[in-house]
Length: 339
Image (cartoon, rainbow, N blue to C red; front, top):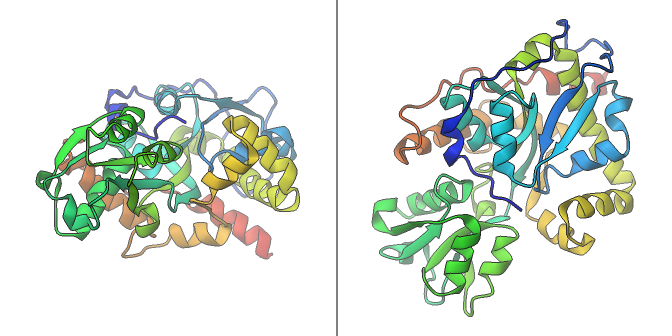
């Protein structure tokens, strides 16, 4: 499982999509031509693997949208592909999308797939029993990742900053290995690297994404060009997601087998990692897209993450967030379900 990072996204290319279609209202039931294929990327993360079920069960076809679902072993590669116009839709974290927008890419979040609710962890050695105990300690994490962000959230809660620790920027796998080898006192990692880090004798979880609801949301992100020129197809993607969740509920064995196989793990292993991920319903989506004053609101979370980007010197200035979210598609789906 490759890290969900955004540091290197500042080498982003301008979008140059090559698909041209006519514009339509997202609530319309217009059918896409089979030649108008949406190039959509996804990678290993429990909140994104349901798209594999959508493909195998032909749920895209059922919603009259032609999708080439492209698997990426490296998550960062999928980010770069969307930025370069090789994709017009991708599965991404909020952090990564904001980072891309800060670098000049015109991307829009149209759906929340999930929130990390424990799969991202800060793991510490024996003798560290509180966040305050991290002061002066050497802590490894991949710089600019959601786990780096999680670490700073925890430090802030205890009245500390990165200046109060010795931060060791390492790739997630290397960070986990360094912790197990006793080279650092604590590490920020996500599953399955969490399991590796916990192999160190006496190690334990200090805090996780479960303690910061909404801090690490995962999404379906599309180019604005796709929304402007093919809104009916964006609507079809959103509809397909909820149809997929319904299929998983009624066909769990078949669905879990498909997701575990795509992830390269056993069904039992997959279920273990999935426990740290909250899959979002339509009700969860409507709430997340609504204004709020904590991290469960996407607007609030985006502002906090933008501050993080600037403070961590990953962006020269905060990006314009006024058009980064578009809830028309989830609202249209909800309205149809209630009609």
